[in-house]
Length: 225
Image (cartoon, helix red, strand yellow):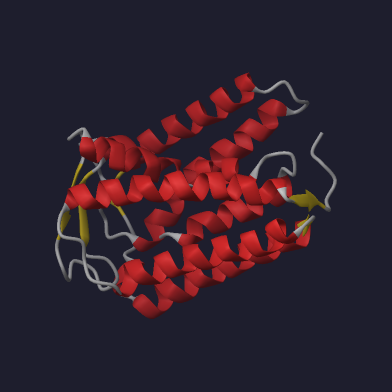
């Protein structure tokens, strides 16, 4: 799951117009921001196994801190609490909980696509996953549909104030689409270190870009609170 996560962020902006799209993207991909850091620290591990699933060669055999259900719940509440405590706006705790739900949505969407490799409890399992990556047509249709619906909601709830808000948005959305297709149909990575560094470099680009685009768009829905 890749653009499906961003779909939740795009939809979340509609529910919380005062929250930057960059913040929403950070929330829905927070677990995948922690994961490469934990890989580099040797706290978690992944194997590149071509053919492991029909859409992904990655064998996620050890990621209890970032992708167990218990871990995801912990990171969700931590994200919500930190965001709310750093803000002084009305309804900040409600908004923080919505962002926390965005963090947790990552695990839920991964559950749809991963093989049963997502631990409910760190290290001890049991392990869950519906394995849609072994059914490419269904997985691509589901994720592509989610992405299209998220784009629809974001475009309906915001309006470009200038060319940066219009063309910058579509360039970002096309970049994410291209990265998704490349990861699904491109050659497998060589080992886990390039995966970690590539993932981190991607987030350095995507989160600021989303925040920049969002500053050049205006909400057309009533702000929360």
